[in-house]
Each structure stands twice: as C-alpha cells, then as structure tokens.
Image 1 (cartoon, rainbow over the protein chains, first blue to last red):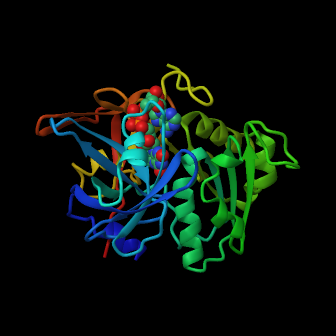
Image 2 (cartoon, rainbow over the protein chains, first blue to last red):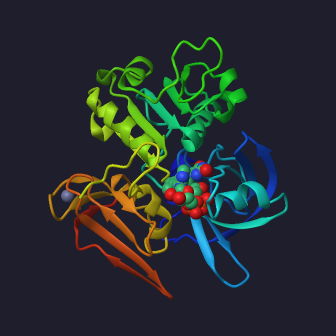
Length: 247
Length: 98
Ligand SMILES: Cc1cc2nc3c(=O)[nH]c(=O)nc-3n(C[C@H](O)[C@H](O)[C@H](O)COP(=O)(O)OP(=O)(O)OC[C@H]3O[C@@H](n4cnc5c(N)ncnc54)[C@H](O)[C@@H]3O)c2cc1C
Ligand SMILES: [Zn+2]
C-alpha cells in the first residue's frame, strides 16, 4: 500500500482536485482539524502534505502547504490548521470554511519527510506547535499497523492550552514515549520549568546517537533550526535528522 | 549569506525542499524531493527535500544547506514554469524497477 501511493504517480503528473469539508473539529483555541472528502484519493504516506489552493471571484489565487494528519482511510483526509493572526490563508481555513465548503487540493506530495512501516530503527519525533501534525500521522500509522518500532515524541508548546491531539496522546500507545516541553506556562507541579527546548531535553527524552534513530523535526523554522542543530551537536548524523520547516 | 532565523520568528526565513514537492509535481511525474541532488558549487550531495527554500517572494529559490549557493530557481508565469537548475550538477532519482 505504501509503495502503491508513490508508484501510482509514475507517468502521472498531479492535478488539482476538489475536496469537500465533511467535518470540522476544534483542536485548540487557534487550531481546527478539517476532515475532507476527496474522491479518488490515492492514499498517502505518513509525513506527506498537500497543497491547498484558494481562488477568489476575481481570479486571484494563492496556495499553501498543509501536512496530512490522518492515516490513509479511503477517500477521507484530515488536515489540522493553526490560525496565524495576520495570515492570508489559515484564518480562512480555520474560521470561514464550513462543513460543505469546497477547496482545491493537490497531493499527496513529499517523499523525503516520511516514515514508512518498513523502517525498523527507533524514531525520535520532535514537534514545535503545529509541527505535531505530520508526526501525528506517523504515530497514528504506527498504531494502526500494530508496529512495535519504538517511538519517542518531544512536543514543545507555549502552554497546556496549545497542545493538539491532547486526549489521543494522553491515551498513548504501547512503545510510544512522550513528553511536553512548555515554553511559557507549565501545568501545576510540572517538573521542568517553562523554557525553550535545550540540548538536555533532547538528550534526556531522545535516543542515544549510537542507536542510530531517525529523527523527524517539524515546526516553525526557528524551532526546527535549533532542535536539528542540537541533535547534530549531540552526535546524531545529519543524514538521520529530517526536517520540515513550516515557515 | 546568513541563513539563521531567529527563534521564534525574525529575519529572512526559509523552509525545506519538501515545500517544493507540490510545485515540482507540475513538472515531474515522480517525486523528486527524495532524489539526491549534487551542488554544482561545493559538490555536496543530499536529498532535495533537505535544501533551503525561500518561497515568500515571486519565485522560489532553493539553496545548498552546505555552502548557501543557489541550486535551483523556479518561477511560474502564464502557462509556463521556468526552472533554472544550473546550480545543480546532478539528480539521482529513485525509480521503481518492477
Ligand atoms: C510542507 C509544509 C507543511 C505545512 N503543514 C502545516 C500544517 O499541517 N498546519 C499548519 O497550520 N501549517 C502548516 N504549514 C504552514 C502553512 O503552509 C502556512 O505557511 C501557514 O498556514 C500560514 O499561512 P497564512 O496564509 O495564514 O499566512 P501568510 O499570509 O503566509 O503569513 C502571514 C504572516 O505570518 C507569518 N507566518 C507564516 N507562516 C507562519 C507559521 N507557520 N507560523 C508562524 N508565523 C507564520 C509570516 O511571516 C507573515 O508575517 C506547512 C508548511 C509547509 C511548508
Ligand atoms: Zn553547495
């Protein structure tokens, strides 16, 4: 199935498809999951994204990338979008586009920032803010196939209200260890003081470099840059650190 | 040139080559973000998905994460995509042998 998703593209350039919003779920004060129904969706790999295109009546059109949060499931696709206050596209997707609304999407795309079930090595996931989205697809894919590959997740958010998928992550999954790093406000009694991710967090909650884990780092550019640099500093080979900068 | 972005946000910012996957899918029938590219300036090799992409302007520019030089430029015009790969010495594209 994983192979088929990429193979299906050979000789076939991607086209824009119309997707309909089937459901919406509030994930936090600023983020919403859009459940899209996409006829003939070819399936996808965990970590891939789609481009979303909006076109105004006067013909002006603009596009942005959004990671796929869900596991391949027929013609359904979930995107989780975080509203950027002065943004052009994200406020529309989060606040204006209602159930029954249509958007154009192109995808799935991206063959490098992906986790494939054949991978046997341990995995470290490092997320900043909405950077959890493609990593959640990896976590969900791992669970859905009953994989025993050990996963660790370090998830950095400003405060507890910013956590996405909190209930699902609280329930956890065997072989998935996780911790939060709060940068501004912590829950009561949280052992680690609020502050940005430090090398020590990655050493403590990651894997030793000689386990040769693959590390996936995703989030805002500044966050990704720091976290990826720290991982290399800790001894991880740059080849094993894959990044997805959201901008 | 400097490629450091502040934390959380300041200065010119870039994304990964992954962000080119959609635009390049208009041209290539295979996903080239997993392809290994060689920089024509410093000969560094690595996945295209790991290049540094500046895409907030009218065009898209992908720079080598090693030396910072331009490896690829992409500009979309009316009915035409202009792709300048003069900074890329080679691309090794994974294909299916079956
Ligand atoms: C491969 C890829 C996958 C992505 N996946 C997701 C995803 O799953 N969920 C998601 O919410 N976003 C994701 N993004 C980011 C998304 O594509 C948009 O950049 C984001 O939604 C902002 O778009 P906008 O039109 O609202 O803001 P714009 O109008 O583009 O920008 C408005 C202002 O916000 C700043 N800004 C732009 N992007 C961000 C950002 N990400 N964080 C903070 N400030 C920003 C800009 O500098 C500018 O000042 C992804 C990006 C990439 C490249
Ligand atoms: Zn170079």
